[in-house]
Structure formats: C-alpha cells, structure tokens
Image (cartoon, rainbow, N blue to C red; front, side, top):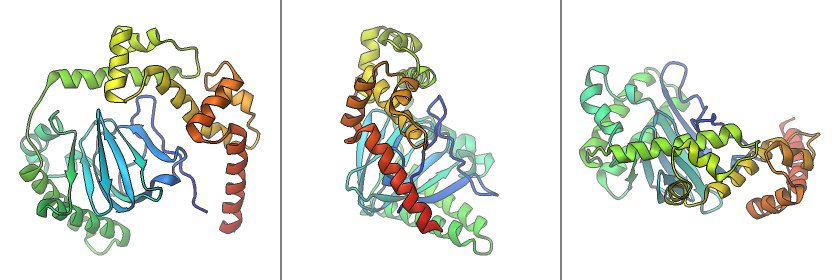
Length: 304
C-alpha cells in the first residue's frame, strides 16, 4: 500500500516543501501523483525553478492560464513564481522533479545578466522539454544524472550537480527563452494570488463573491473573468473545491465526524457538503474516511 502524502502550501499558495539537500538549495525526487492526498498536485507556487521528467504515464500541467500535456519520456520547465498544478491523466503517472533556487544555477556574478532577466520574463512561464529535440533531451538527461547523483551521493557529487545545472541553464536560454516583460501580466498574477490567498485564509468563514473580488481590488464581474481565464472555474467553485481539499485532511483523523468537518471547513449544510464531496471525489465523506482508515491500517501492518 502506498503512503498518502499531504502536499503542503501556506495561505499564499507558496509550497512549504523544503527544496534542498543538506548542503545545496536543490531537491530532486520521484513523485507519483496518485500518492498525494488530493490525488493530484494542487495549485501552488515557489521561488525555485522546476523541471519535470515524466518517467511513467502522462500528466496534465497547468501553469498560470495554460494547460500542457506531458507524456512519458518528456518533460517541462516551470519558471520561478508561476502558479501551477499537476493532474494524473493515465492513472499511474510518475515523474522526477528537480527544484532549484535560481541563485544556485550559475555563479552569483552572472545572476544579473543570465538569470534575473529570464525568471522575470512573462513570455515564458513554462517551456516544453521534448525528448525529440536535441537540447530538450540534453536537459532531461542532465535531470536524470542529477537525480542519480543525489540518490547515490558519490564523491564530489555536489560539484557534478553544479556542472549539470550550468549545462541545463545554458541549454534553456540558448533554445527555449524569448525575453519579454509585460507589466499587465505581472499585475494580473499578483491580483490572482491575492484573491487565492484571501480564500485560503478565510475558507472556514462565510464568504461571498464580493469578498473575493475585494481581495483582488476587482469588480465582481472582473473577478469571475480572472478565475475563468486563469483557473478555468468560478470563484465559488474554487472555494467549494478548496474546502473539500481541507476536509480530506480532517477526515483522516480517527475521531472525525462528517457533520463537524463540514462546518469546520465552511459548509453550513451537511447534505450540501456530502453532495459536493461526492461530485468531487466520487465517494461520500464517510466512505472516504472508512477507506482511508482501512488503507492506513493495511499500510501499518505491512510496515511492521
């Protein structure tokens, strides 16, 4: 039985995972999407740049407003600060994920010229890494080498990782980047994060569309357009979905009561909570709770 992992973000949607080894601001690990408590990697962002290589199955990545399918053997680069999520398309998707601080990609003396303009470029929230392109394959091969280096920690592996990162960045800026900076795009992403931040702080309270719009300094209609354009949903639907996400964690507690959980996450009706939970998870809250307890018991028994 696979252990279910809770993907943690703070109220600003900033991921709380520590993306670093003991000595370097780098993390490279294997992820199976279905292991996550939400059965997907929820919407989040981080300052680190991210590169992914899908080693099994297929995943859909959403980066800001755009969606991108990534199949086995291919990958994607996600720029610093971009909102993104990942959903399992094949049902068994596994990928290798590399997260690294932009400040560690090149020597600090080169940061202003060769890093900063690229992580600020609004024209490139992501870049597809296609194994059929020589430069894309070079990056994916280097990602695999870094994963092996961190896993096995051979002598001087930190130096080898630094060398691979320099090569990766050179390949990216030579082949994948066009530098454009659009202040409107910057402001749009800032307002979107502000509205999501407000929802994540107040989800357990009574929330209206006007509350969400006010958080982004927008009219109600413009707020709806933002959510529809960027997240392909409505503000209210996003709020309901987020409340259900929070309920998943509470329902794993042995003494959890469905009615109490419903009110704790902001629903004012147990029946409405059950109905929306079933629509989202294809299972009732009580059945989810029982299934999770059974799976946890099985995992504990195998672990012992």
